[in-house]
Length: 364
View (tube, rainbow, N blue to C red):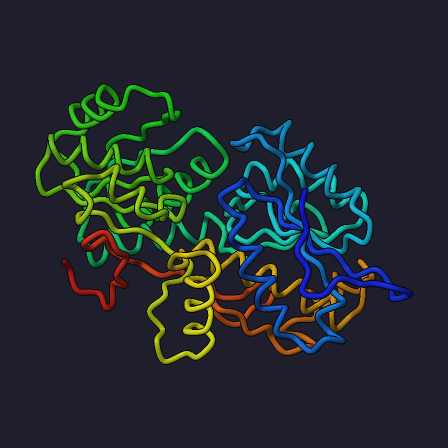
């Protein structure tokens, strides 16, 4: 593990509240960007908070590794909250650790609806898979005019949850799902795609990809080579650039994708400052996952600054947002954890390797 602090507590000062980030190695830049922002707080405020990054040197989201990660973080002195884990599976298996001890867990990009019942110490920032699935179904049936669809989904909690949400929305809208195809990262994709297209004749109007960037791009590239002009709608897990565009190759510009945020609100000073900070500290433009992580880290840091280093007070702070406290204004919008809060979702399209917001109901 390593920590980042704007100003470390010293001398006789009390220990700072620790906000931990439980993500694979690709998430390190989020901690650096957040720490850089906290460094601009007044000295008396910034010395109250320290970020800790869990650098367990094992990739993936194996349940045993994620539980180990949670136990390691729970033992950190001064810990008041955890942002993570990196995916739905990791967040779900880690939640019992945090809920049993009484540590706030704020999941920025996990979408499993099962997190609703993970416990009173678990808060989910992203819309869940039922909301995202409905959003994809509405877009495919509406602007894309789809009447026949194939759904590919990765064999994990993210893929299964999004599959269920999409299929349910298609049923409500009269879109025929001709095939639902489950896969793993090691699957033989040419064989899977060929078989799905043969069983789904005539060809589908749209292919839904409940997959991550490499698999989503690969499926799109193979499928469009078989059926020119085919369109694809990917879930948020695929929105990692340039990997998605590189894997899709010539099919890239036929991919639509759900995002939690896009860096196109140029009239918003907070967005401009965040983009500039990300470029300076991380050396690249921020992705939607970066914005969600930044909001989660800064929200917990703000709660620790305002409510103090008491875990129960941090939890009460989050619950009060939109009730007795104003919503927290983040990069991705106003944040509350009210049960009826509207989902913040954006439909984008790949164009020249970049994500471009799709506006209006017009077909492509």
